[in-house]
Length: 83
Image (cartoon, rainbow, N blue to C red):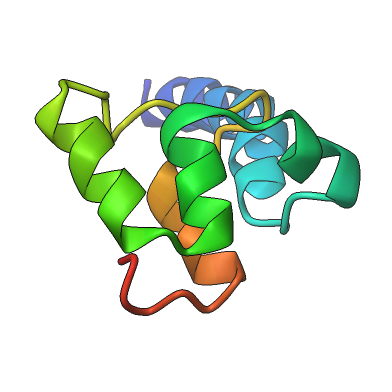
């Protein structure tokens, strides 16, 4: 019984691995150019725009097509103030 459970958990982990790993890679130039809202402000490190968007109700947990949140994007570009 335990080995069957581990097989199922391993299968789930492997199925999720591509989504998780793509969020761990920096966005390319084309992705950054296509960003809008919080993702665009995060890529630019625009603290004032991030604050305005959050105040207006933007979702800080929103993800891009590769599972990156605005926090991921700010981190990739070393925008510490934006974080």
